[in-house]
Amino acid sequence: MHLTAATALLAGVVSSGHAMDIDERLSLGGTLAAGGQCQDGSGTFALAEDEVMPFNDTCRGGMPIQFELSFRPSERDELFVAVGYAIDNGLNEVSPFMLAPWAADLEDDVKDINGRNRDALLQAWYKHTFTLGETAELGTTFGIIDSTVYLDENAYANDEYTQFMNEAFVNAGGYSLPSYDAGAAFELAFGSWQIKAVALNIGENDDGHNYNFWGGQIGYQADTGLGEGNYRALITGTSKAFDRPRLEWGMDDETLDALDEVEAPAGAFEKTNLIGYGVSLDQAIGEHLGAFLRLSWSEDKDILEYRAHYTGGLDLGGTLWGRESDNIGLAYGYLEGGDLGLNRTHVAEAYYRLAFNDYLALTADLQYMSDHYDQGDTIEGWIFGMRAVAAF
Image 1: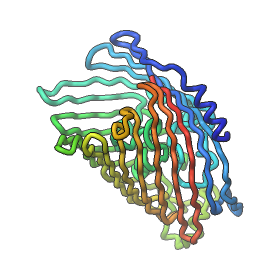
Image 2: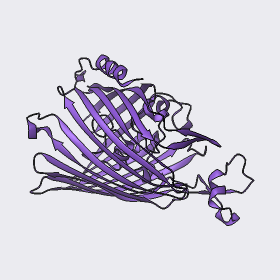
Image 3: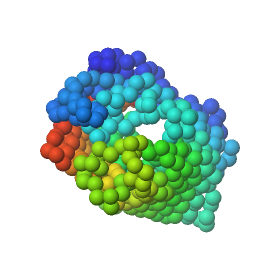
């Protein structure tokens, strides 16, 4: 889809939106988004074994649609359901870059979710909040949940529909945060502190194995002369369900990179778990400026493409130029490669979000990415995008 065609599609989607509180207990909400992106770059990449493709300058589009239903039978109880549909996969389907240009739930993401043979149903959970004294509360959630709702949040870099589009600035990949599967979440809030714990059972990973995920986070909110700041530290892990080549077999790196589990002899792989840890920080600086910083590391450099993620950026409020609801986002990331052939990735993104009202916004987005491989190959290029979102 060319960018002009995508823009026309966006205009069709952006129609009148409004909040839909059916009554005091029942509400319906949703997000209708459409995005078009064009890539322009250089380099070659491996499409399949012994098949090398040049960088393809092309344009693609995608349109995710999500609806949410919330029922609150009491002030401390909530039933929540979210479903998602999408048309096309945008550049994510053809991009040679390791990072997805748009981290939205596109067509392939909402089909056969986690190998469960389940389409569209993203979340379905029940939450009850307990009062613990005068200043503390404990929220308990059970059902089909999304770990990114509870872990690695950030005020300026956490929403692919209203903030940055590139996945590097939505969540840190080193945590391998799963979404849309059975689990539980616990949120303890007391004063300026918050402690969260999440556990999920995931249908299958890329190796085809069922696994358990867990994550814990401690956060502190400070309100200083600069403004409000949030400081979070987290750690995540999984059960042993990820295939790791047995290094004691004495195979060199080239052989390991080419090894296919289906063709590998019995015992060539061993099961291991994934561990990630890091921080997510955001800080308001006066009335018009905000800053964020994410640092994360993984101990599994021989399984994951990246062993470390370092990202940060700024948010400029539109009050600086008389557009209170608009904002500009600027971000840069350096991702250190693991032992799978990718040495490092540089990624930068800038966007301007033009808000028409509380419900409708149009974003112009520009990204630069470069993937540097151990053998000296480099893929680099620019991605130009437009995104329209109607939220109600």
